Image (cartoon, rainbow, N blue to C red):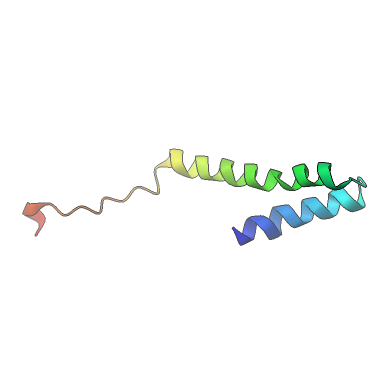
Length: 62
């Protein structure tokens, strides 16, 4: 969460204000792109299946 804010949200806010002179409403939507980037990373992780771990114990394993 903190990585997304500092690596994506803050730089986007800085660019939006200093390069594009955005007002608060467009700036808010620009900074919200951080959430979309986190969603895309999460979807990639979900589809990879790397988060799956079998935590069940079977009777023959005990």
